[in-house]
Image (tube, rainbow, N blue to C red):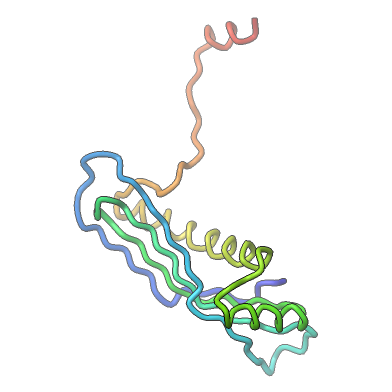
Length: 144
């Protein structure tokens, strides 16, 4: 599978209140639609599939919300494409396809979400890496 397109069609950030304590953050990711598309410029032996998605980040209790919607276009093997379309009619996916699609959506959306959270003075919705100070005495004790 290869990604050949990704774009957001909706980005919403709404801050509804102020933080008085660390918020509880919940996320939601959904596939809204999936269909095979045709393209004149693609001469590949693979089949393009368009996936419409939504991704939400919710700060509880109703402090803030980030909502994303968009499209992802992937190229898949024609046999796999038929199976994916068939399973989608039952609102189901293979685990391999689901992991691939969700990871792409999460990667692209989380990068944008971190930027928006910073601009809105919201804490990041997941723990970012950070460095910690360690004094020399504790470091020497650990070596012993």
